[in-house]
Length: 190
Image 1 (cartoon, helix red, strand yellow):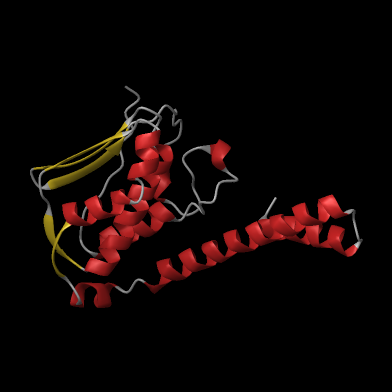
Image 2 (tube, rainbow, N blue to C red):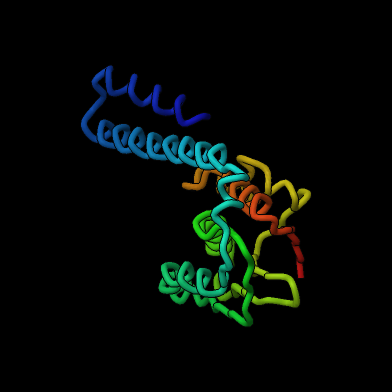
């Protein structure tokens, strides 16, 4: 069911003056669904806002590892608690729009954090002309991996009620493309 359907049903229940315990549950659920819908709207606006000319015009050399290290810091305590190790090696500098590329990297790191398995690893390294960001996962992905670039696709169907909108990697792909950075996804079940 869509968030709007859920909110409508819960609002109707509140209108019908259900008992006190349920009132709080319905109100909390409406607030969560409103937040989720706001995130979808904001992510869609971000996706449509990306102007190729603006991004290219405001490009400068950017060292990616510094941005990635800073982005990982906010996840480090939770990852450490889960036994997840972080490995970073090398450097990777490209002429890009700093604000847009940070947004793309934030989406990628957020996904790595969400889908890394306990006692797993997030690895970031440069290999020649390529930057690799990978994470281990205990989950199987049965579909074509490139579908993860598409809007509203989530890697794990059981996470359908998670806070993500399924737009993060789509936005990241668009930013990478506009910044003329080739990107690809790979799934290795080993």
